Length: 172
Image (cartoon, rainbow, N blue to C red; front, side):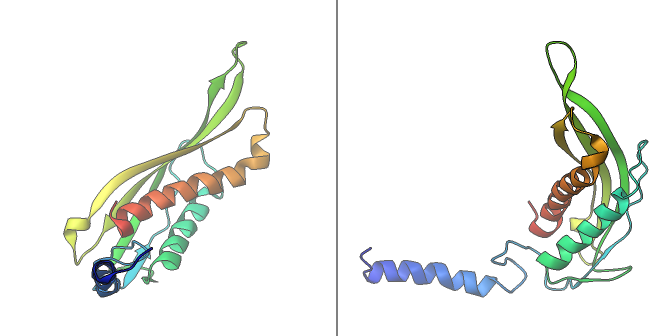
């Protein structure tokens, strides 16, 4: 590539704003978009109030949510009254057939999970929201569900946590 003065100027004009805005709370190279005055987060336990209960679901979901914010932001975790506050409930957890073969037997099942999430930012009330998130994973109907349940729970909660993170930290 031939770099003349014009190309150097374009590169410099692109790089300067990236460095200026990368740590000011407006935008970071990781994409996280959290105001400078937000330093902490509190994430309360999400009880499972779905008709069908998986014993580890609430714990896995809550811990994945905490881990995501701790590993991908500079926010520190507080038990209560963080600058960002997340709480809610798991509202649905079910398994249903989704793929049917010619002889009306299920070929594929779907694990679906939903959680109602309340997000509060006392310093920036315009960010506050309550939203229900739903995700699912499909698996072969011939598979013993109890043998793969923990992996399916991990998969569906990972997707849901990413969606929540996107809405809160990335503002997508």
